[in-house]
Image (tube, rainbow, N blue to C red; front, top):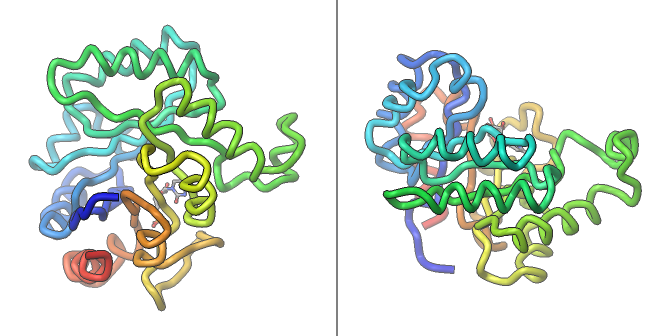
Amino acid sequence: MSENPKRLITAIDTADPAQARRLIDAVAPSCGMVKFGLEYFMAQGPAGLRAAQGLEIFLDLKLHDIPNTVAGAVRSLLPLNVAMLTVHASGGAAMVAAAREAAEASSATRPRILAVTVLTSLDDAALAQTGVAGGASAQVLRLAKLALDAGADGLICSAHELQRLRETFGAGPLLVVPGIRPAGAALADQARVMTPQEAVRLGADYIVVGRPITEAANPGLAAAEIAAVIR
Ligand code: C5P
């Protein structure tokens, strides 16, 4: 894993572009990237990404549709020059491959395709209700292999999966990890969390942090403190 002082990604989970700008101004010195998700993109659309003010963008829309439609969505995103985007591995190998192929058509640096395996909101019982027996842990590995074999550049994963994913797939895949809490921070609704330094030690290329930064009295300082401990 290369030395990268900007492993921190701040999740800009708001629908308000002025709020997004304020946050991004504050965290810009400490972040390698900012993450926009469905909440922001549904409200502000492509033009809203200007709020990133030149910072690299991780667009977390978790695409999941037939391969032709996902490929079209990725092509439509190419002019936005996002650095990373997400698709659901459960859309199948052909869908992931279609996303990768569409990304290859980029005239600039192509967006990296990250696959989401099993949503951490699903426990084994909830997963069984969807027809997946055998538990979340086995399904994460199965979908990770499917996605990487189909051309995904990396995975979104929980910090608790990091070690096993690195052991299984080596140093190649980008591993991007949400559910991170600085030591002593409030957990909010994240049940299984890890500190930034622990996640990086276990092989995270990037950590995604939302509320511990965005709800801090001083978001710029909160981001700087996290960046400092993963340097
Ligand atoms: O506020 P918090 O640090 O929990 O935000 C983490 C970000 O990562 C949010 O944008 C959330 O949607 C996202 N995320 C997550 N857990 C996952 C996948 C994504 O917290 N398993």
